[in-house]
Length: 136
Image (cartoon, rainbow, N blue to C red; front, side, top):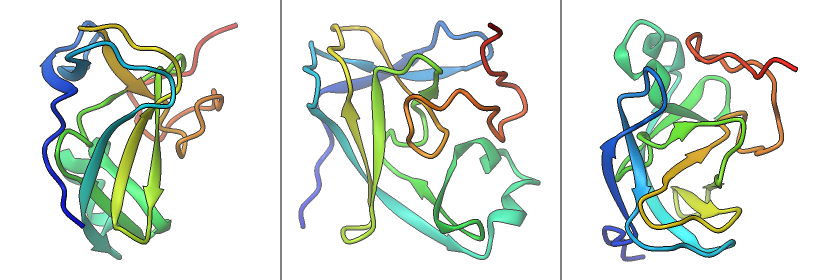
């Protein structure tokens, strides 16, 4: 498989409080459109070590709670939202994390995903301590 950098996105300062950088659409994206295919670095049995590092808020659980990965490309920079416009899919066969639009995304709009295991409708508390679920 050949992978190349996505021309559909760019990184800039996020408007989400305390988020730092974010990933933005370089052009309008359609619902269902593939945004980016991110190769991964696998970290087997190292999830516990990440809790003590800055990478703690940037990894993806892979096949179990001890097996995690870092998504390359812009994969670990997409910010979390409980109202996401994208989702991610773990592609175990190709060893990638694939981001896909779940609604139309306008040019220069920040692309966000719900990090509750890729479920865009899950509003439960994240492991990331600085992000709280919405109050109803």
